[in-house]
Image (cartoon, rainbow, N blue to C red; front, side, top):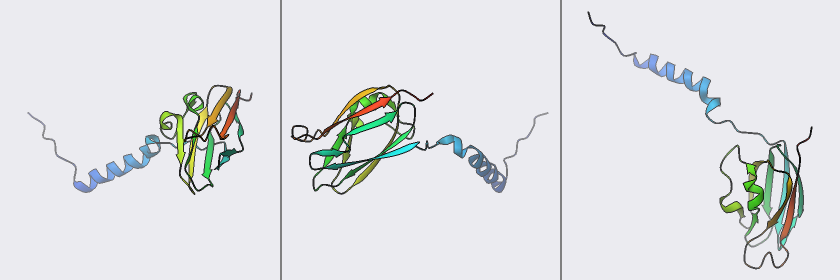
Length: 141
């Protein structure tokens, strides 16, 4: 004798879906909160500060603020290649564009200790001194 399967009534199915979403929602995407934040100002041919000190394996929020009338970027391809981005993808080609008067946040976890070069790749900006460095120290014990 065959068994007959009946569909759940609409309200029961909706309840089960809502309950599953409530319990599983946090698993879908969990944002990593940074351990600390550093603000870097991008102005006419300068990063301020021009030397950053980061700790390996600690999430950091890099808050980039462009105070100038022109566009700039924060180009650090080697640093970004040696980091993970728990809340999203790494910046394309290791550069973060920041338009005039805008601010951009990048949350990442530097993984490899070392000294990394930073520069603005806009025409002649590096030549005029828009360079800096990021030092990543080993993880604290």
